[in-house]
Length: 419
Image (tube, rainbow, N blue to C red; front, side):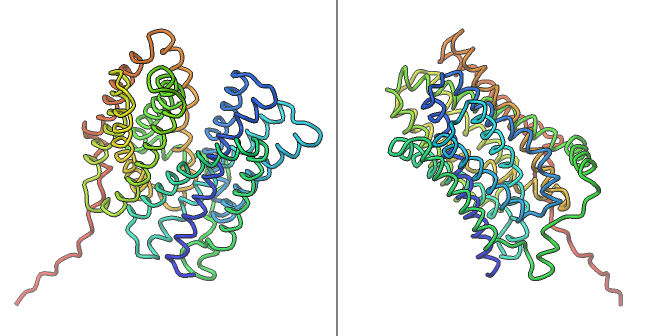
């Protein structure tokens, strides 16, 4: 296949794999409840699904570089599919104790971030070969993740309602198997023949040395230190909003779960459109100012409306604005990361950055629950919108944030002509 076809194949693998992840997040809680589990058990299962992402990032990235990027993508999806398929097989045969379910959920999530990091490393080479600007390719890659949420969330709900959570997990396992097959057959690194094969694995200095090198890079790079801190805090606040505060507000003010679905779907659909559209203009706009404006809009309206106690029409409009703005954030960050990270260590650094950004998510919903219980849902939304806005304005302070701007093109030296 030509370079553009291989790029499209990579995006298709990302959509199918991430759709499997989204369906899993819908099916697993209902699998816990179906076996008589409590709300606490559901929370424990959610924690078991989140923690391996934080662990798999730093430890899996260096492994990806040793195994190879295409092979790592294939292996990641195969492991996820096998562990999820084991749940219904055990439940329908010898039984599925809670500890076994937690173990399988943990192993399934452990390889998700390394697999995605491998696909992300393949992206710039394929984009370059296809003649696609880096920002556009990253925008399409991020849009594929948004699309997987749009497909996976309603699909998971329909499968669970129609066939039950265990049957839904079988379908999820099939999706992961399909992603692995697509990657194995259609995805190749940039280049042909021996060049492509050799490019699929980077030379290493040893597993633990590679991890240490990636960690030192993240710690010493002034820009990435700021990025990890910013995204960790905003992801914690986003988790507080989406997992705890918004469901509580929907139950109290918006009219229940159906309204919550409309709000979430509006945000997801707008974010998908924003990612696709921004990919076509990203290489023409200044990065830092655009990033700040969009980051403030990504949180501000959708947090301010519930803080003021407004109804569903206002929430839908705010979610559309916030979703469109949110669609531009990851394309900007993704392009900067690919420009600043040395090619030979991209997988391990992506893993470390992903783990850092996810570290606050398990705490977000928990802290929001305590705050809502203590001061009320609207007051908690008010505190979150203030904190979110202050934090997302940080890049305007300058300093290392200026490194976000795209590097100036090198100019050829002008030869002085003498007569």
